[in-house]
Image (cartoon, rainbow, N blue to C red; front, top):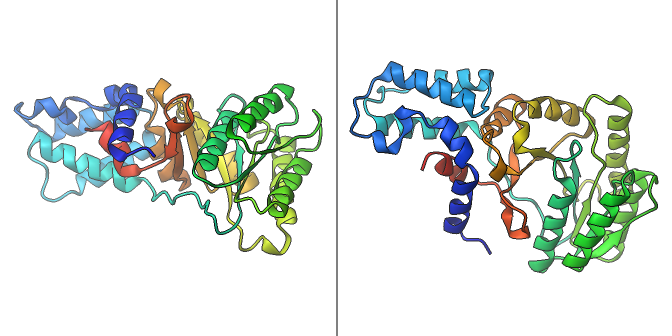
Length: 309
């Protein structure tokens, strides 16, 4: 188990690049004794938000929210507290993933090539197996033999059931068999990988929608009572391009949230605020390293505290 204090320190290290871009003088905890000017503080914050890849539209929304704060902050600390409140209120509540011993939960990860889907899926498999939940792992990226091989290594590491078909097989068939195997073996979690694809490739997005339908078909009468998560895996380095990716995958699959990967290698962590404000998407999981314990459920309060400690 990762305690909050340990995870906060990991987050602080992971968002160091984003924090350096975001935190202008007005937000610097060491500037408490410096003269404070409200208008200068807003202008500095605007620059910081844009540099941290929060985006123009979301930045304007946050600044408007701060303009309405009453009474106006009259110190660096008050401005910092108001900014932290605005940032946290921008983020959507992130419900925990519904994996329990009481039944089956299904999770399908989608995203573009190189976003970290397969690795994230392997980390999840290890996490659930270690917590006492049984997992069936499905290699739905049938276009890359390397992806199947990579996931088989994770399955062996997690010691869970592994479903694969030959390269080039129908991905929806893998999804169907993964869910059926999970049901037949009374597993707690079915995890399904998918091939990376660009959101503007219509035929590939239609194939993804077909895979999602195969899950419901396999669940049969249990479809209405089985939690099914469709999570978009986004590389934190992607920045504002993540908004276009989210729009395309939302239309195809009805996303239930985001997995943000490689946060420790990015200075563009502000994208989480834009995803929430513009697409109503909550970050559900965040990855700050290579090990299974470096993937954890997203906590908006801890994230904002890591950005502005």
